[in-house]
Amino acid sequence: MLGIAAAVLFVIAFLINAADITTNDVFSSVNVMLLGLALLALHVAGIAAGRPARRR
Image (cartoon, rainbow, N blue to C red; front, side, top):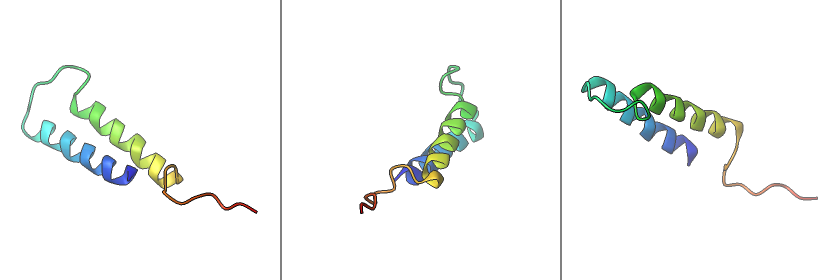
């Protein structure tokens, strides 16, 4: 799920950058891309993977 959210943020960052949309500093393409990278890192780390932890 986090990987899908990261992909959506990457697409939004690409569209902001490609269309030269002027946004405020919070929603700049670089900040949106960094949020996507953070979500991708959490996805790769296995956070919120949807699998329950193994209990013994």
